[in-house]
Length: 276
Image (cartoon, rainbow, N blue to C red; front, side, top):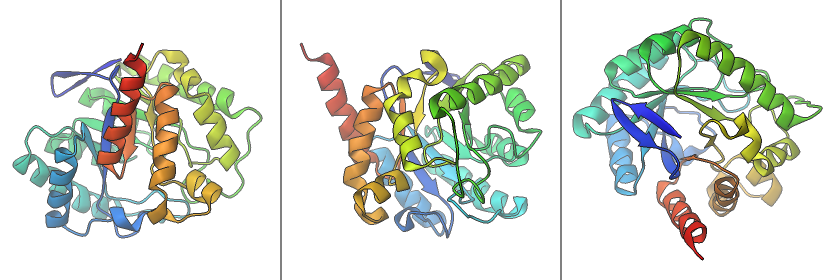
C-alpha cells in the first residue's frame, strides 16, 4: 500500500485524507466552489492546517447532468491554481481531477503529483499512455455512462462483481503500459442507485481483491442526502458515518470537502483498531 509521489514514498496503510478544491461555479456542493486564486489559497491553507495529505484540484464539475467544459477553459482554471498553491505551499501533494490527457500532462508539468480520472480512460484515448509517460500515481474510477447520463437508469446484475471486473480489465491495460501506482475508486454516485452505493460500501474490502489502495469519495453525496432527506449543507454527519464504515471496510484515502472532520474520523478509527 505504498505509492510514490515526487520521489516520496507515501504509506497508505495508514488512511489518508484528500481535500477537494473545486475551481468551478457549478459543483454539486455550493460550499466547495472557489472563484479565484485568493479563495483557493485560503482554502488550501485551511485544509493543510487541518491535516490534508493530498489536495485534489478540479476545474470541471462532474455532477450528474453537468456540462462538458472546453479543454482551454479547464486548463485556464486548473494550471494557475496548481502553480500558485505550490509557490506558496511547495510541499503540497496535488492530485489533478481530470479525464483529459492534455490537462493531466500540463498539470503534472506544473507540479501535480497524481492524476485522478473519473472516466478510467474512456473519455480520452490518450489518457492511459500519458499517465504511463508521466510516471505518477493514477486514481482509476468506475463510472457507468458519463456524467451527463450516468444517473438516468443505472442497472447491474451484481454491482460489486461488475465494478471489480471493470477495474480488473483497466488495471491490465495500465500494467501493460507500465503504470505501477494504481489507486482504485469504486465511483460512489457515478452511475449507481442508493442500493448500489451501499452494496459497494458494505463490500469495499472486495474491490481490487485487497491488492490495491482504495479511495472512497463519499463526501456529502446523494447516497447520504436522499437516504437522510437532507441537503448538501446538512450532510456532514452522514458523511462521517459512511466514512467510518469505509475505513472499517478497507478504505485508504477519504476524499473530502471537510478535512478536519475526516481526520478526526481516521483518528477514532485508528484508536479502535489499536485497542486491545
